[in-house]
Image 1 (cartoon, one colour):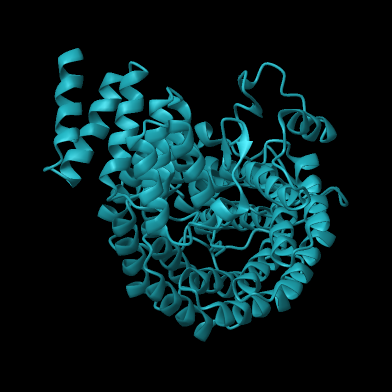
Image 2: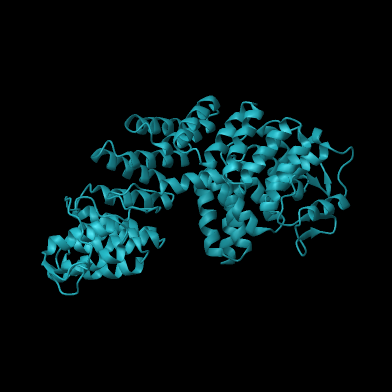
Length: 532
């Protein structure tokens, strides 16, 4: 069964960070909190900015086309700044806002406008520096706190961004821009329940705030609450039936619930408006594959590849669909395309091995493996794991035991999660950690969202002293289920072995908090504290 994998999760994560601007800025495609003007501070006017540049002399504009000077007031300068900001002329906007500030040092709209322009120029440190001056002039202004928080967010100082949002909310309770800044920062900090609460507060203020609904839906998806996700995006689509991202994320949630026909319908709705979105074509193909409609799935993958021939995931997915159709040579061609683009792409390596096995009577020998690597123009010199296998150390060894491929019959022996778990336990009891990792790689290919497989993989890697890889596996497990005590313990063990005792203690304590009766977790923490 094909489920949403890391690429989709990355796509979804990017979406949660994108906010519809209060003042639409042409040519902007930013992620994260809005960089636009704070809601409630923007002047409402149809004023058109002059063609000329703002003069240095406060109170005047010099027109480039006519040698005249026109007297303007502070509000005019703010309007000019707003117009330039909306047009994407950020430096010109700053000049106009500076003129307004010279004339009126307490003009809130000028200060916040200038901070917004600096945000668009990615001058985040300058925004924070400007905040100190603005606060001195306007200690009770909530907008400058929000803009400071936005800058902190983009500097990856999320806890500070939350604090700045809270300061703004003290001055102006229920201010929607502050709530959204806080919610997005909480999301990045993986404080998802708190983020959802902040999104709900925004929706209490504006029940039709589409992006607050969308962000809430994606946070719910991170928590695995897919039925609620669908309800949220249905709510979005009632307000805005053409909202493409709502259809996309509804489709992803439906895939998680194995409601593939409905997922296909959702993706087709999205493709009506974004027919060039490769990730949606692949998602549609995955839903079709799960319904055993492989020919249609290949057509969907091919659509993605027409748009982006370098899309490795589409090549890999196409390879698996071709395998299901027993078109092994074509599957190998698809995997080769993926490996030309990314020689380290583990799923393509696994798929090609499986396809190659069908084209020969015997297992592929060591020489065959070397030839296989050479055919893909891949240089793994210095990366060979040991003398018994030519498999590169940074490639998964799924299906490889002592350098030989498992037979297809043996691969097909495990048709359920429980069967894989039993096989992994047997391998652990036999102290065959290579086989443990092999089995987890194979299982993860079939069940990429199973946190137990990821944490078991981490344990096997720990026993092989591959601690960095173990941490990556444990992190993946934790991201899928934060209540997985074993994953926290696995990461703690890897950190301990790397000498990072303080960090290890945090993870050991978390594992015990989640499962206080596990003797291994207690023993690990006590052992660590004896070393500290």
